Image (cartoon, rainbow, N blue to C red; front, side, top):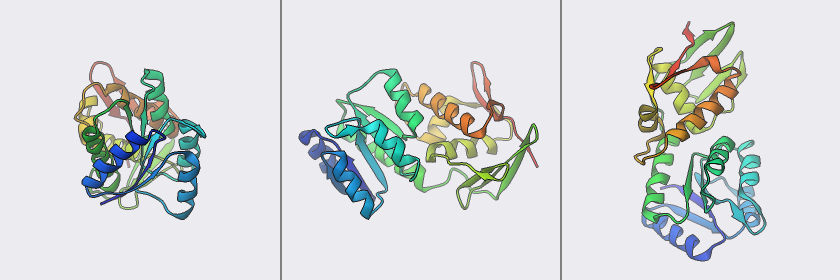
Amino acid sequence: MAHIFVVEDNESIREAVTGYLQLADHEVSSFGDLGGAKDALEESRPDLILLDVMLPDGDGFIFAKELLSKHPIPLIFMSARESESDRITGFEIGADDYIVKPFSPKELVLRVAAVLKRTSAPVVRSASHCWILEGHELSTDEDSHKATLDGEPLKLTAAEWKILLYLSSNGGAVVTREQILDRCLEYSFEGYDRTVDTHIKNLRAKLGQPGWIETVRGYGYRFAGEST
């Protein structure tokens, strides 16, 4: 059972989502605006946040960006804004998923389960590892869920952490987008190749240079660091 915050100003949607999550044995705190959610976050940290983008007292994107810069809480956007640019913005901010309204509450519950699963369990069990690329040193410690670049800690989202571990554990082998979706993001939904691309783009930016993760045209991605 997880504690989930639902931030949605539409009462009927909020009640439906809350009801389905409770049927899945989750504890739910629901809010009709950002103000209520902010006050609750001062008291406790949820296991996951379901967040509308357009709220009466603020922009969900701005709120999420500020929140995730301080607290890496798993987050799923729920929005009627369905353009590709909006979805990409959501993932660039650090969201773990983005679901467009109208949606099936059952599908939402499945996506919540997928996000909770990947943020609470490691992809692989391994010791600490270190890689070198062009004089830069990248290290990961699976037990502590920490990664550092040249000794400086990297602030990775849960999805980025999973992808980095999966790519680096494959020893330079090419990994397809479908494999990343299945092994790291656990999506069974079609049309999510761009989600992988967005996570890779964000991960490259945090690693400081794109060379750590090579694009293999027509196939997928390959980790280029040399193990020490």
